[in-house]
Image (cartoon, rainbow, N blue to C red):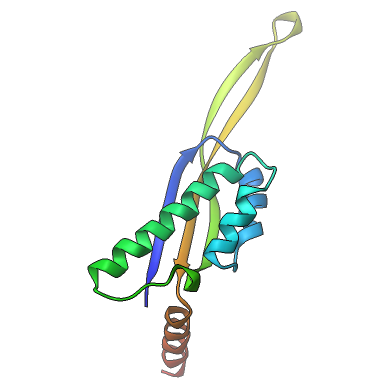
Length: 132
């Protein structure tokens, strides 16, 4: 019924570290994901927490716009992924006039929340497409 997407781009967290956090919440209910992220010790958990909260707010707005009822307990993380963003290249001086390159990586994080009936409808649509 409702599917909401939230994205954050160019966040200064390495994609590898962000993927560790995103893997914790993939497939979980939205409220459970918020509870997991609140107490996760990783540094990337705070921006991902804000992103999931934003996706919940997006779902509320989308449901209000379509005049449909939305229970936050029904929402779950149907997809969550991290893509690599731009890399800032910096140099640090080293011994004997050499330079040492430092790569400051960034990430693009995407979270998709949906209700269970939305997933069933998309699964039935893909089955029908496969029969053609």
